[in-house]
Image (cartoon, rainbow, N blue to C red; front, top):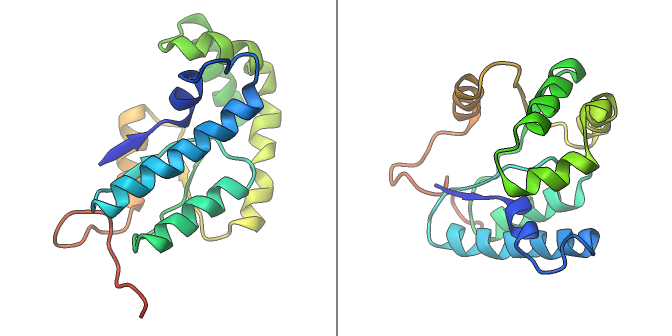
Length: 164
């Protein structure tokens, strides 16, 4: 399984802090390119990202279809109070360099708006599997694994038959 972190790609770009929108677009393009390479090699790809709008989700879904891979869309549900607590903890003890910048952009006071921003996705992406993320990280990871489609006999890329 390959994990692709769009934020790490973005923060690795020169000038990301002076051009965050353009850097975000380039990072998403890089993520799609990397995902395609790995999917075509028969590997599973996980891309964890806060996405409140659909264009990148749709691009990932099209990519999976082109590569003959299953697309699993999972939304981690968390109430605003728990999200605020986690954002406060991240601000108090960032464990990644980009958290210092992200903490200036998004904080505990934004939790209500962040949770609300995902609500339109319920109607726009009704097949997304929603997972309760209020538990510990190991519990949430187990819930995500349980929600994923079964792997094929070869163990890779959730392959499905290609249309002819």
